[in-house]
Image 1: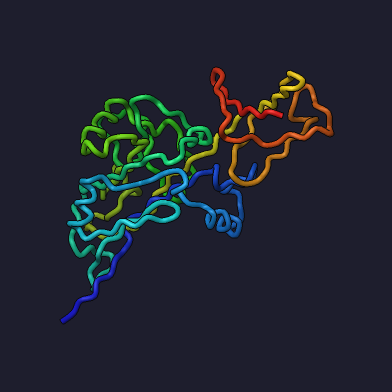
Image 2: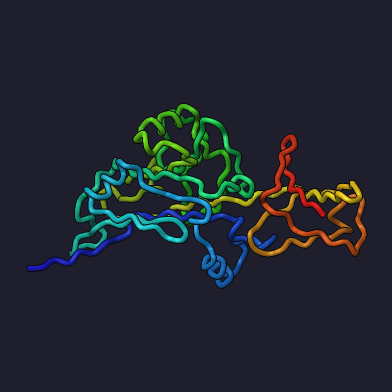
Length: 280
């Protein structure tokens, strides 16, 4: 007698980044489904971030016959299900079981084009359960139909960060940007992965980074002059942001002047404002 096993989606985590998905000043969220698909086809999180299960989670994955599969936009975790019920895991998963995944940054310029602040001794936490060391209000990981963008509200406290790092193996606790920590049942039912009977709910969680906006400062070395835009402009991988010399500067610049978009390499922070320096 032979048995064929099927796998069902336990949960999916999608990571979006507006620096790569926006087209100049056109946001990804405002695009048509066709244009969104075109942007996703060119998109891969491997260009800026990596996600791996912790050692403990890798052991849970093996023992419960789960599959961890990377995707262009994040990762999926699948579970072997019963032949008679594709919503019922073949090996029962306790509702308190937790899976943790480490996030590391691949691109040294990530902070330049991402609208967040790195803070010493704190990492980002994306979870469906609030640690006891955190206070209210607390930001839970979003679902795919929500529009919240990642901010420093997702930074774990120093105490929580210490607890999270200390739970890892020595060889895996370095250079961690953040942790995705998902328990089979969260603090609220909408964030559950399994229902009360242990069956699949197939949730899709989302981590959506915004692109940084900077004041664009144009520096003319030859004339020893500087002009800067009246407002912040978005940094994007695709598209071109048009600068209008008559309206984007005070006082207005000559209409015939042309102003290129900046690189993400030349960014400086002055007080609380970020500036992109463009030498012309």
